[in-house]
Length: 489
Image (cartoon, rainbow, N blue to C red; front, side, top):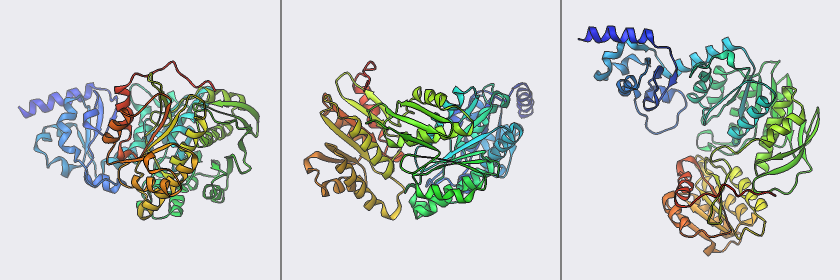
């Protein structure tokens, strides 16, 4: 019986064409190769969770969903008796994540086209999307990271899109890839998979301090992307961020800078008062100038747009084409999405993640863009900001004070150190009755849904672990969207 099953399996494997790659057995699709992770793999590759699932025990389910083959660790595979009948369709390796990375590295080496690597403490996904839009508008066929695929598991999966779902490497002219880090040494390992031709450094902020200890060590980690360039590569650096600007010293080749305050190769000037859903400015590049209407709010998004424009300059794209591409961009999911509701209130969904710098910047954008007569109350619902290390409480208090000074009307905190946000706001004058604290996002969602009224403008933002996106989801389920409303400035 087992021999019969084995022969059938071999024949089925021969007939199938590999359609892609998966690391989650629940998401396996027919024809994909499933890489089964284990605790040893995750620990080795900078994952910071407290517990990890051994995916080897889900190998039978992967084959039930149509997997063509599995990559696994032999000792882990043999621990789970129910999967042993699939040994003839299993490739055994010492490190499954390492095997995935090696495969992605080989695909890139054979492909041989330009790679744009983007990193920074915030703004990576928005900048990636803006950059891909600019390059696409100029006729380049762009491979870009999907979702938040920017770590030691996600980056190779992003690359392997070239070999998935019927795609082939010859379908693409350029790759735009996010490269993130949460622990020391991680960026260096990502650069072993991907050697960028253009390295984009957005900004350095106090994120992941729990693992890095100091902002200076974060800057050192991010700088590995610039160090990975060869002399023919280009560093794209934020001139307004002192730590990023110093990275110029690490690269002997071309550098293109962007900024607002400091003199740079790519700059924004004649910036108009921000509207809730757009920022207007004049773009200056070494190749000329163009007027831009960016459908994203806030200085932080303006800087992301300048970084993307600087990449456009690296590819010799005219400023007019850059401006047109930026004008047709849109906010990424949960990253500044403006949601209008028929009950007359508006929600800015920036719930994907948070750190002190991005929180304050988004609040300032909310206040600047919500000065119209239709806005009656400006409300910030801010979740705890995680991985800030020993200074987390003080950093929350400082951010709370800046939020209050920005001129918001109400501040609600969600979970943990968000209490310190409220304390910081109260210390500089916001009244106690204009603040509230909730232990979790579910409580905050219920309270907010029963309290909102016409004319409210609400920002929802927090670290992923706090799940402030649940608040927005709850509101979308409870209230009807008004898709016809737009801020016409």
